[in-house]
Length: 253
Ligand SMILES: NC(=O)c1ccc[n+]([C@@H]2O[C@H](COP(=O)([O-])OP(=O)(O)OC[C@H]3O[C@@H](n4cnc5c(N)ncnc54)[C@H](OP(=O)(O)O)[C@@H]3O)[C@@H](O)[C@H]2O)c1
Image (cartoon, rainbow, N blue to C red; front, side):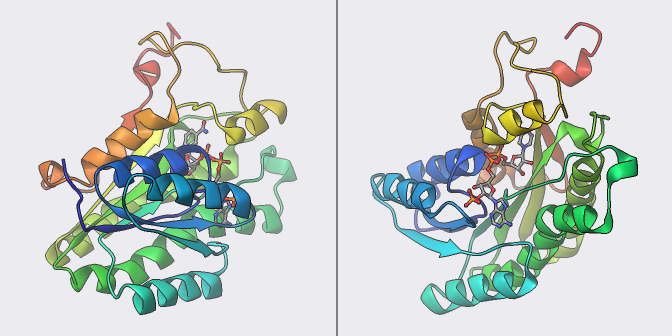
């Protein structure tokens, strides 16, 4: 699969799963816009590793939960490149609390970064993709969109929104030749997982899946790369589960 001369924006790609996606797409010849929020050093490292693969990397700091910052990020992409081929909506945050402790601030924070940003980025990405005759959008979700995890309510709802929006985008953007899908992972060992375990949101799930090992960021990146390929042209509005089979064997694992 080649993504030569394509340009991808991967939100939150300074570390974790976003970084693995950026490196995977870069290894297929794709230039990368590395978006980050707080951790500039990590994002610079990602950009450097992207460049080592022989492609371009542009660093853009933007809190995707802030609509003005999303607009500024896309203005920069428009002015610098004039086009975009791939959008990966990966950046996420969240407040882990039981329902009765969720306040408006926690709800808005989580929904703004995880769900509203997906809509705003897709709206700004579409015209830049149309300049190229089409494009690919992939939303990153989690099993918490469909399964109940302790104190994960607002994050789970935000991920359900990601999956529903993926379906709507897929149909409305199909005439623009923009394919939209999502990938939903089970527990992946990143800083986010360590946080959720510490907060008691999930049990220490660092245990093998039916496949015999945990899901790693590269497993998610491989599926995302497939969804960005020509081979996935007729896959639309789907959420591909990347969990080593865990969710279909809940009484075994
Ligand atoms: N880890 C898991 O077990 C797991 C399972 C299923 C799904 N997922 C999903 O996979 C995606 C990546 O998760 P991860 O585990 O790699 O997370 P992570 O290690 O916590 O990294 C989060 C990334 O998102 C960025 N980010 C956070 N808030 C942002 C904001 N407001 N604006 C822009 N960037 C922001 C961070 O950037 P800075 O560092 O610069 O702040 C960082 O690069 C998320 O959508 C997550 O829900 C993760």
